[in-house]
Image (cartoon, rainbow, N blue to C red; front, side, top):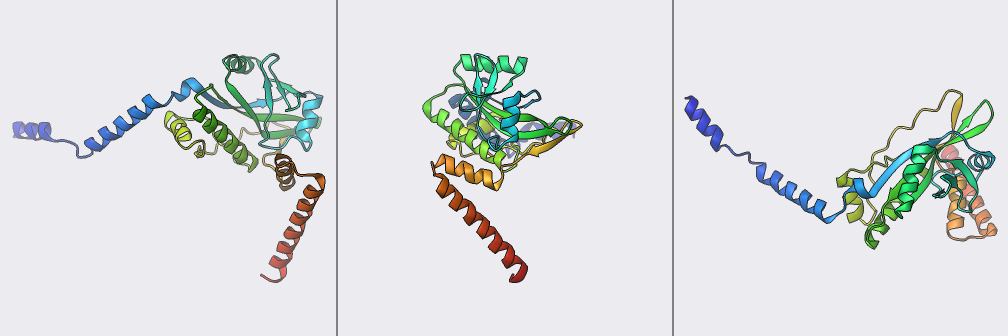
Length: 244
């Protein structure tokens, strides 16, 4: 009887084995076609605690909107505004990491993720999302630029997206020309004692201002759009209270 069972065991073949083998072959083929994410991509969050006077003014003012893009200076390790104002010094190991990327001509996209306020002295700290990738062929470069733009939109809406990409996710980004950005939402690091979250999403006014700047709209058009938004909100509020 034992010999009978041994023969059955030897002759048994998992009916799912051909599908699993085919799926593995497809994965292997994709891994050969596309670059390895670990060697050409990096994404992480960094909290900056020490901001200068310009940094506090920027992040606590109207310019420091969530999802907006900043600039990393490889010469000094400073985080700058788009027009070159100094916001903060990126700390040691992270600065060295980014400087190494810059020396290899990597793209570095720092995006404002969260702004915090210390109640004691009314000073700010900021969490920055860094999306970095090596220079790749044009189509892949465009895909990752689109991916970073989509992450910026998620941050602006209050969604703290994971910036870590598995190889499978990285390939999905490249194959979709950057339209795939379904990385999971991650929890925010809790504020330190005596600190509160000042901004974690972009307000309606900031969205409107950003839209106007992107499309080069003048102040008159911006004001018109703003008041149309206010009137529409009032109409909706009155309708919900009295008619609906």
